[in-house]
Image (cartoon, rainbow, N blue to C red; front, side):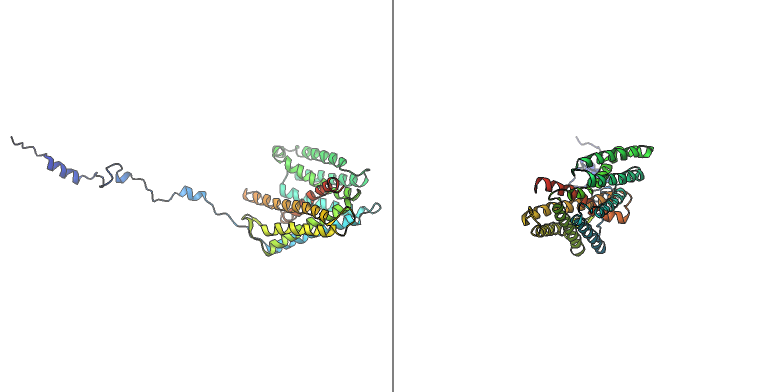
Length: 330
């Protein structure tokens, strides 16, 4: 029996084709057009996370100046040890005290300990006390310097506890204070070495090797600062390696002309230790400065910033020379 229903199958198909909400063919109606995820739009948040790293340029004149300062410092320490005598120790003490003051100035400006004025005053007194015991103590040894360093550290920490803003920083900065005090005391060790057997020769070879290593490393940075160790550090790996090698060679040459127990081989070993220590400390200072710059800290005064590396290097070379004189050459 025929039906007069207007909504037959053909009419339903026609309405489905003309419907505005019909999904495009091949998508099975899973995601409508107006709700599709915009895959082609860039993610601004991800682009903001990637910041361009600034490349710190290598300044040729500055590298040459630091090379000259390191060379003069090593030469002064070596010649001072050579000319020091039982009746003529005052000139070398004056040289060492001047270097201690330079170290104090550079590292306090670089590390910014709490109460910098009080810390500097305490460390200056520590330097005088360390030099006094290094010259007058009999027998010459490191034992009095340990007490001087300990007393100076305690006094420096006590001077940082008076003001509230300084007290809040003491817990985080006591390592910087300890390093400053130990560095000042370490510069009295060359005087102790000149009063011990084999000590003078060891100090001459160590100072010469470290000075030659730093001089060559900085000179190479002025000429060929490649490959760069880090983009934020204006140093080249060629200079560091070449400095350690030529510093060792200079010490071996000195070992061939010094009296026993030095030989070219022993001079090379002493020079290698001194050169590697000096180059690594100098490089570590550069990385520390770059880290403070990236952290947004206030930049260090430029003179102190550029003297900090060589001064810190020779401060660590002195105890290394003492250890070599007693445990390797004795």
